[in-house]
Image (cartoon, rainbow, N blue to C red; front, side, top):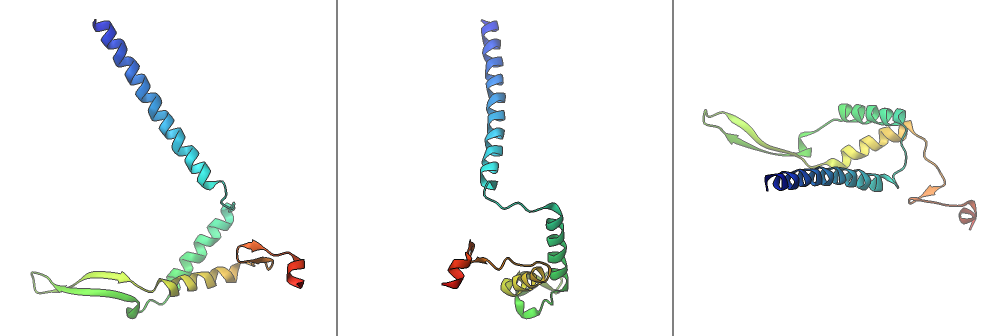
Length: 123
């Protein structure tokens, strides 16, 4: 009886390990499926984009009007900033995109995420 119990426990453990491996494989394949239609970005271009975005954010002139903030008085009667939220992401995004535009040449045949043929341009 104890041999049967041990054998069942070993079988359950083996099946649990197999299920865990299959779940990891499933997650990997799901990620591959998500990535299948993504354009390939060379690592040097990615590094350049990272530098451009970092420089754009670093040189962006944040102004007080772009934030919502609240002050509180703490138990020592000191004023503290209790809540700060950035509410002007559009201008920051535009500044970043301008920096990117300065470093890359856009394909003039692409319009609205689809290729336009020269015949379509003439017509």
